[in-house]
Length: 152
Image (tube, rainbow, N blue to C red; front, side, top):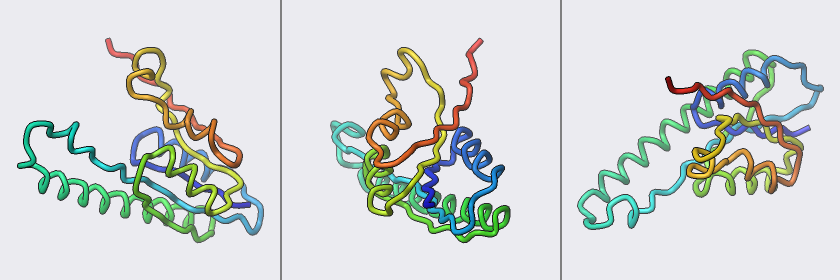
């Protein structure tokens, strides 16, 4: 079995990794830890000036380095807890599309990922990566939900 674990450093992503580590996996199971560095669309980020493009590029590179460390750290947890080496990858592009594409290329049997559990207007505005992955993935998808905290 090939299991792709999609992570982004969020609390819900961490819950998904914890859920994955709590179970027994069949001998021969392979893991890939994936994160996605989504592009910055400059025309939306800085519509009137290109003065900040260099700083945005530096920030994006810093975030890619963060994601690289994140996937290596999750792979280390998998190795420590399950005794299985995990591949790591940081893809570039749209998050949902990249997860689906990587699952297809790697021939994954299962995608494990977290969800913020957004509803209503918040889901409409922010979209749902988990929903897009679940409806377009070439394999089964396990979504570990994190209850959204209500603002008081």
